[in-house]
Length: 179
Image (cartoon, rainbow, N blue to C red; front, side, top):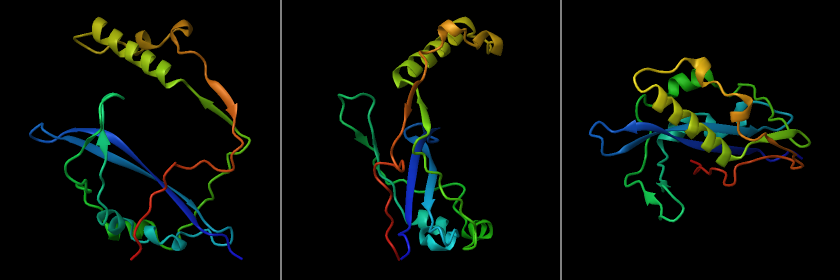
């Protein structure tokens, strides 16, 4: 009996400036697939969404909303998002990733130490460093050594934990319509 294949795709939205007329936000999307192949067949051929990834992406529209604080309702982007420049290229993709492309199994993180930092502390620290640089060096960038923190200025140390989960995945795996 073969194991069912799994694929999880994380879509990370990153700011990419404004439109030419300055009225719309631009975004880039960093795509991170995590494929779990069969132990007996570690090849890309089993994952049909990736045979022609550019074609798959061009057939998808993206919709999401944004908000600046927790009290405000999310503001949806008015138009569906589609890949733009450079347009995804099937010939290039298939020349790099054919069905025989070897996949490395994703390592099982159970029992590994994980390090995490308080997002609030990191945000506060980063904001302070940028504010200090802006105040003290308004005309030209500061020397790098000046911006290096002393031990007292660093955010509180990491929180260490050991995970006991068999696998970490995104909360909502992406689903694609099959052709």
